[in-house]
Image (cartoon, rainbow, N blue to C red; front, top):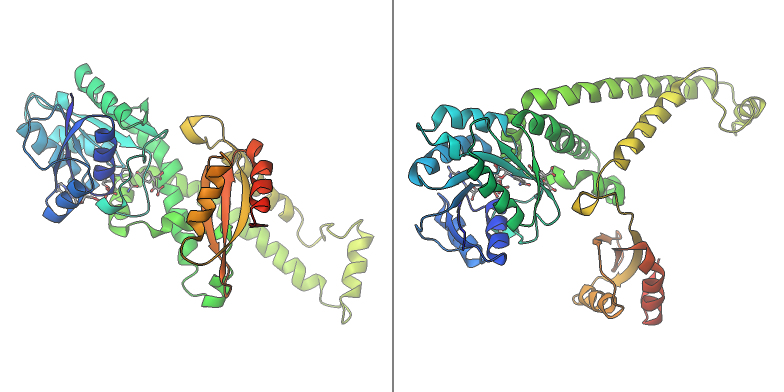
Length: 387
Ligand SMILES: NC(=O)c1ccc[n+]([C@@H]2O[C@H](COP(=O)([O-])OP(=O)(O)OC[C@H]3O[C@@H](n4cnc5c(N)ncnc54)[C@H](O)[C@@H]3O)[C@@H](O)[C@H]2O)c1
Ligand SMILES: O=C(O)C(=O)C[C@]1(C(=O)O)C=C[C@@H](O)C=C1
């Protein structure tokens, strides 16, 4: 049986421990915080002991990861050692500089592309990595047996193994993880000065875009600093698009303020003007091209979104959403789950919305399109209100 040692038992370390235990591996746990280690143990992620490992997983914050990898290489001379930090080039350089002679061959970087906006062992989940890419990042000096050991670890935790160089990894995650975090953060930051009534109007769009804005600032400062050049490169392109959007919006705002200048009290002349141009939405001459710029930016977004893979790295799966009204009281959600289970239908995703000032919530249940009509019929026939 394979024995793993996990050093750093927060969200990711605990989740890896839980996943490996479920796969039948033995797991030892270590963390400088005795409480973090004990909590991971109590949650079932492993045991606290000094058994000799076959593979060590360093799941510590990025700014200490290289040092901890070097310590583990020295402490366990027969083990492959990996880290799971979200940046790879900086850690590999650190390990190369710190690792003792004859040990750097046992180091292979890795990065599971799954996580949560919460930290610590209590947020750990055994199924966190299921069907998600797990990037294995050998260095030019990594021994093939060490690469195999890290591939086996990722597969045992149910990740989908992808092998990349550190440079390829860092450039890719700048676009697919690090800049998305920055954009979510900047979007959420704009809400701070709005009053609670305005923010209370938030629908699913804002929730979709800002979930990861709740992530740990200390961890993300380290991640962004560790991939600064790659993140900056993508943000420069974002800056260009933002500049184009701002110019287009300025032209449209200007058009709106000038075209309304000699309207009658009900805006009659403005309507006449638009009709004369061939339709309600015909562009006024004040902002030539501005709408095309916005449409191009929005279309680029559609094209990018269409490339995002669904579960297991396959083609995007379009789920149907069945929106169910549930009383905002204990037990409602449990009854709904039981009802969906009785219909023999799998819930692919779930969002809960609380309508401001109403004693009900909306449960948005995502199911495969083929099952949605059957689910609606079943729920209606058992007394649920469907939107
Ligand atoms: N959070 C995510 O979504 C995510 C996803 C993939 C990878 N990662 C990477 O995983 C690593 C851990 O992130 P997390 O979200 O689990 O953070 P976390 O804050 O939940 O856990 C970090 C743990 O590391 C411990 N630690 C601190 N210094 C240490 C040291 N010197 N030696 C050993 N352990 C130490 C802490 O006590 C804590 O228990 C980071 O490198 C991060 O980049 C995070
Ligand atoms: O889904 C989340 O909450 C994440 O933070 C996951 C996410 C990501 O960007 O996909 C974040 C950082 C990690 O390095 C890997 C995964």
